[in-house]
Image (cartoon, rainbow, N blue to C red; front, side, top):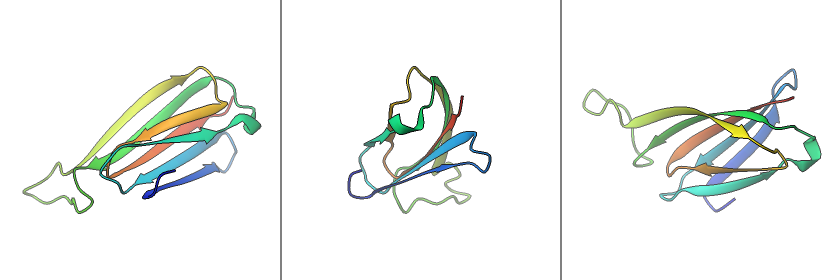
Length: 100
């Protein structure tokens, strides 16, 4: 990953879901490629959860109740050898891949 981008990958307790976390401190979006070829995962769906803001100093107050935004989505995955995730600027992104 680029400077200012941190990643983590871990299985859940039952090893049914692979959880990928990305933290992007940068003012630009950052693409991260996860090489999952050794895991033998089949095509499926990924749940994507994002928290993002316009600045790293953003915080919620009564005057700025939407300073930090949240977006959830799902993405169909044709293959799981490589998974590229784009983290928005100033964001935390979590991708949950169900094991099949």
